[in-house]
Length: 508
Image 1 (cartoon, helix red, strand yellow):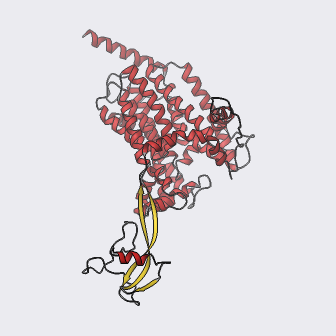
Image 2 (cartoon, one colour; image 1 turned 90 degrees about the vertical axis):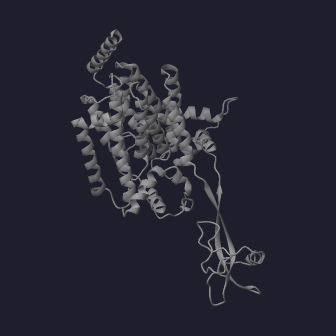
Image 3 (cartoon, one colour; image 1 turned 30 degrees about the vertical axis):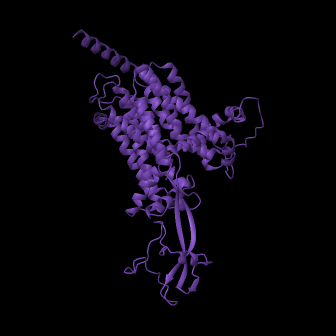
């Protein structure tokens, strides 16, 4: 990994590209973004509020509307943002800085992936300068400054964090794929950690990635006897479920009677020890209500409480009714959580119809009443929708067809470039000369693109959200183009050199 970083730093083009990306991001952050949630990503306001909630130490299960669910599925964005808030940065700027840093690191990790691919053709895993042709430089520039990807990665959204950790898993897997790498346990651990963090950003995207990675890792075991990638995927997937499925407390509120000294004083009664005058804590760490000594008389008195602040005068003394909260932890099964993520396919029609409500760019409502014997209705209905939904997800909005708002016009212009990139990627994958490692890597990347696009197209209900989530495949498309657009003469020269050195070693 050190030699890869050294190769990246030694490249004048990559150094310049990373620096330009850094300064452009900072300039955009402070010169163009408003001090309120952007209209292009209003969800960043919710993430900012949640980050502040966490920074203040408040229980996430009491976060308004969303509860603990949003925190569990976005904690990789929330936790670094809350740390920035604690040092004095505003909550909105904190989530934006976390997102833009992830976007910058995504460029670095994508470049490291290219270096790792080039090293697979070398005899040793040492330092070697990275050689990029003009086409590869163009694809890296597109990835860095494609308007939508640049915008989403500067707003306080989850897109850039998700792509960063998926690229990281891919990079460490490429290192594991190299027979010249010695510290495979180290890279396997890093790959697992990256996948865990990916689950903590977007669990559904990480789920699709993990399932496909699992299948391809089985092929590697069969072909190359390479088991480290499978191990890292299994560990990352399992730990990812624990990372995103936290125990959910159930809150029970009740009124309890607290003994006071006299009717004028509302001081709480002392604890069971008569020497302490401080109120005893409640049974829950979250509740600041004092808990009286546990006696039968006190329990009987508490039953008489009707409202908070009520004063009860009994023979044993004067009592005040106070509100108490008790949290009971409900254990959740990570296996059940993973099952629910996979079974989301059963409610795709409901989800896309729900996602279209209230959206300016809403897609037509899905209505399917087909029922065929022995074939689930959901499968038939989704297959019928797919020919329309998949091209819509990949290429719409389009100029003239979906014109209207400024956002649709800008997205339509960018989708012309998306159309060209996807068509060229398909041509390059089948027509250009590639070795087995490159073919396998591209097959994995493009399978991920097709699978994710298919699932997302059947899930999305409006063009705006679909266009934003499309950035989840940009990194895979860019990496596939970077690999397939490698200089042919260079590839043949390196391949012949490797074969020559290998034959010389066998002779010796």
